[in-house]
Length: 75
Image (cartoon, rainbow, N blue to C red; front, side, top):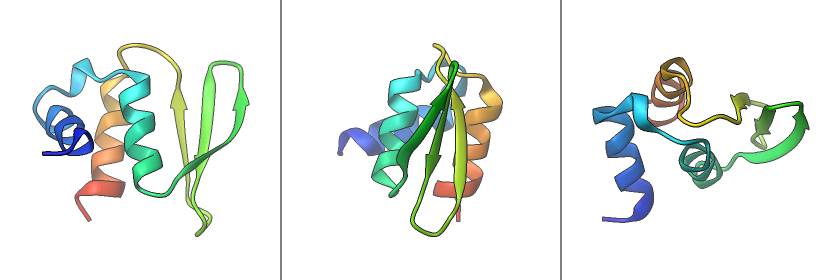
């Protein structure tokens, strides 16, 4: 099992314990790249124009994790 798969499993089973760096790794794996920073917020975009905003904090709020699961993984 790859490290990305392990992070995704953790996101499903323990969504309150995900760090910013783990979420960023998943976004990069799915083709997003860091477009810009504004304060503590990091804006990631993909080539199709989809945008995802993460706040750089540990642990991340569960709403960020749920949105990632809905938009990226559960499609």
